[in-house]
Image 1 (cartoon, one colour):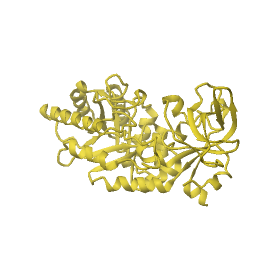
Image 2 (tube, rainbow, N blue to C red):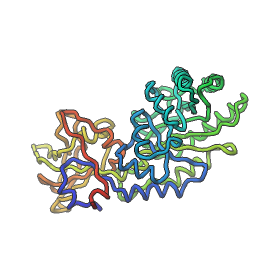
Image 3 (cartoon, one colour):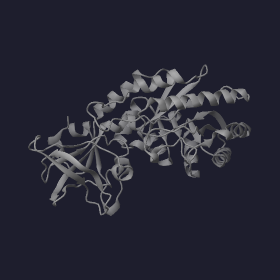
Image 4 (spheres, rainbow, N blue to C red):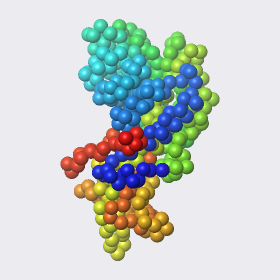
Length: 385
């Protein structure tokens, strides 16, 4: 599966992206969406320029949460009219960048933000297309740190303020209200969570129509579809059919309404792998430590979320002689642990270790803590060159 001989020639740690799997994943999405469905790739998951370029070339849009991401998306070839921009703290220069580029929509999260977008648009003689991000107070079965749709979260506009803010926007000369935006969280595997969001949107649409607000052009349900971290080889591509079918069955769109999605992890999560080398095997009476040259600076998810990544020894001499290890990194932090009590083939200094399902929130979240060098990212095409 992996070009291990090529890996041996490279400086570790690094990220490897299987672009064949990426393209298969994008094709699966296309086969399960209809013409009124528009998928915007969530750039925050992975902004490797080569990955962005492939997704742009395949005709997808981009979901950005910063001015830097808007720039990266434009540079990668995403058309501005397929870029949506969300975030609770948009700076003036980021708003101005979106206005100059002519992006499809700003997903607005508060009245003060709406007022500033209107003000900046008027100064530039432009009109900003806006969707209101509504906090639907819908829970998701996922880690507490990646839920976004509860009233206690910082994201979005409270449902009770929806009509008032739509009325405000309609009176502003610098904005055009084009839709509603929602997002309830990330790494969601239970379709019932998405069905609950669809039902809440149905309620809100009916409420708006009862108050005389009709013809909402766009409904954006965000993303959130998770991946299988436990068995990446058995489920390399998420069940997109079940995901999109959940919205087809439960969301009552009005004639002509367009439906938007913001998928990130589900697109790139399984195509990326962090490759590291074993530095030392250290043992004491109660533990065996496998110390690798990658750390929480290269893949922070285990330290940040207690997240699981399937780990493989790619170069072990025997696949039958199993030992239990704590797999740890070199960072000067006790939290720099990838996993504890993990069974792997007998491992030696110099062995190559693969941390699977690391394409999302891996390379993009890497840091230079301890003055470490950021990991390089290589694609299937790079290693064939």
